[in-house]
Amino acid sequence: MRKHKYKLITIATLFTFATAVIHIINKLIFASATAKNMLKVNADHHYNWRFGKIYYDKKGEGSPILLVHDLTVHSSNYEWKNMIDKLSEKHTVYSIDLLGCGRSDKQALTYTNYMYVQIISDFIKNVIGKKTDIITCGFSSSFVIMACHNEKDIFGKIMLINPPDIAELNKTPNKRTKLLKVLLETPILGTLVYNMLNTRGNIELLFTEQYFYNPFHSKNEIVDTYFESAHRGAGNAKFLSASIMGRFINNNIFHALKSINTSIFIVGGAEEQDIQETIQKYTDCNPAIESAILPKSKHLPQLETPEQLLEQVEIFF
Image 1 (cartoon, rainbow, N blue to C red):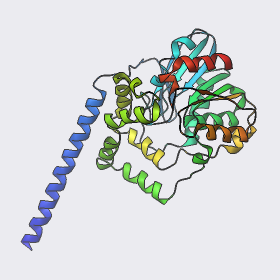
Image 2: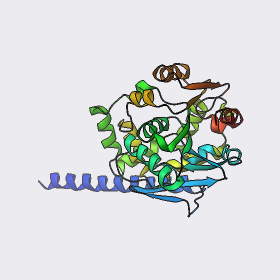
Image 3: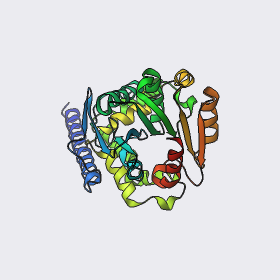
Image 4: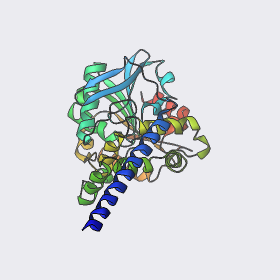
């Protein structure tokens, strides 16, 4: 009996020690990731939304353009840094950090497509206050399409940069994805798994393999900023990651896309995987959609080849 009790005490002690060590490791990762303070904060630029503060930057004068970054845990409005100065010569440019990203609040909740749809609509109505053109990238394209479908009067022209495959958006949560979400949201261990998935090396690999056509365009400043964005909020970014893995941000946009009569222009990177097929699915759904392909470009032309993208913006807007 004493021997059994001793084993239980030993196991409990080792478990407590291991938990404490993991907790310390997580704290060190967060501290090192944010030490360079790449994402500066303007204290005046926060929109107090119902589920947290939304950070945004504003520059220029003229007709409003809202820039909405791709939805990943390491994304922020930094994505648009090479375009804002030029756009602000003719427009009032708003660039936001979506909830769960960058300098915005990172709440412990389930992030959904509908939530982001509401953020975009509410931001236009309550901050911008007038009909707004939008440029968006990647997965966030689906939020803009749905928001425009719901409240078309507040939207002007829409530019989608490398939007997601419509078929991918139709995938709904299942038992496996729900389990992944629960596991990633667990305290300490889930945080460690999140940190292991979002190391600086893994983010650098994303740029060299998925985001940029030319891997040598992936500079330390860019990788450091994305790394910091993924780890601001002391681990709460894992809740967005869990919602993405769980497919809770997916939504069928087919009917919304089909019924929209707003001008839509799709820009694809020539080296983006299956981009021609993706654009074809969008134009099959809505033949009024126009498109252009940027040579020697991949997922983030706004960072890698901004001059090419700005040429298309000048033509469309």
